[in-house]
Length: 205
Image 1 (tube, rainbow, N blue to C red):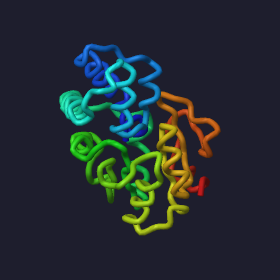
Image 2 (cartoon, rainbow, N blue to C red):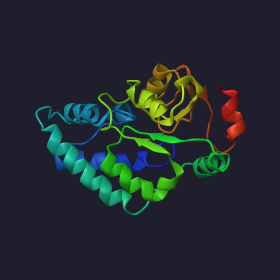
Image 3 (cartoon, rainbow, N blue to C red):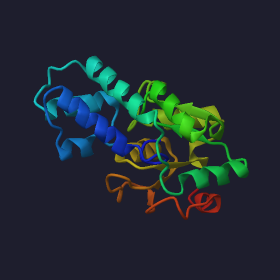
Image 4 (cartoon, rainbow, N blue to C red):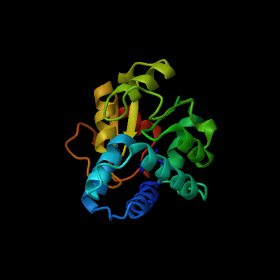
C-alpha cells in the first residue's frame, strides 16, 4: 500500500520527523531509509536508537505516530503513477486482488477511503498475521484467502522487506522502487506502473 499504490511514504516521513521532534530529537536520513517497509516495532527500535533514546516506550511512540498519521491521511493520499489504472484494468478482467501491507488495520481503514474497499477481495494488514514483512506469512495468508497457489500470484512491492516477503512466499514479484533501490532481490524491476497492464503481469508467472 504505502509507496506501491499510494504516495504515502512521504507522509510517513513527515509523521516520523514529528515524532522524533516530539521526543526532542532529529531523525537521520539513514534511519528513515532503514524504516522503509519495516514493521512498526522495528521502526520504533530504529527511531529510538537514532535519536539516542532507546529507553522510550514502543507503545507510546506507536500510538503517537499513528494518531498523527490518521490526521495526515484524513486529507486524502495521492496515488502512485499508474496504480489506480492498473487496479481498474485488473478488476475489469475479474482478476482477484488482495492488499498486503505491514501497516496496521486501523490506519489501512483510513487509506481504503482513497483506495476503494471494493477494489480488494481481501486485505491483510500488519496486525493480522503473527509475523509481518519480510516474513512470508502475509503473502501466504493472502494466497490462502484468495484460494490460489502463491506461485500463481504476482506481488507488486516497493520495499526490500516487501520483496523478501513475497519472494519467500513463492510469488512472482514486480518491484517498483519508491524510496530505495530494489535491484538484485529476485524481482522484476520497473520504474513505475504507468505501462504495466494485466497482460504484462501474466508474463511474470
